[in-house]
Amino acid sequence: MALSTGFWAFKTLAAAHELDLFSRLAGGAGITVAGLAEALGLHQRPAEMLLTGCAALGLLEKSDGRYRNTPLSETYLVRGKPYYFGGFVQIPTSGSMRAEEGLRTRCA
Image (tube, rainbow, N blue to C red; front, side, top):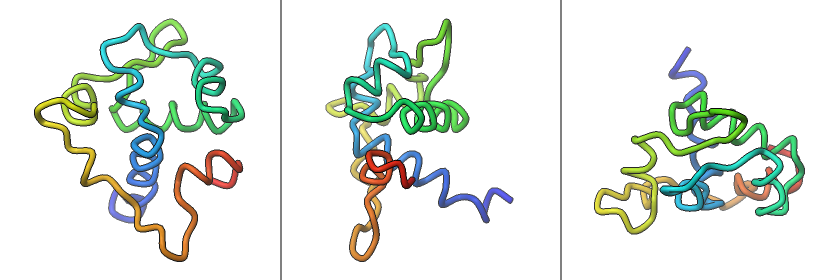
């Protein structure tokens, strides 16, 4: 099952990377769904789907309605950190919609 749905997990990670979500949340107090939607100009439902998806993947944790980076994402997915791995997280865009565009148009 994990192999057959692996692309969905990757697409969630790629969308978060395109939106620079993990760097935005680095070392901070976290963000609410409404806060992320406003900050990125998204509708609340796609913002909630992104945050929930990242939490389900172990990349974010939720506490008191706020999402924060887990140690994993803080270490490997925040730009400028020594072990930043984000450069490997990209979806080829030829012939298909970028993950970020899907969130913005609610087609993700």
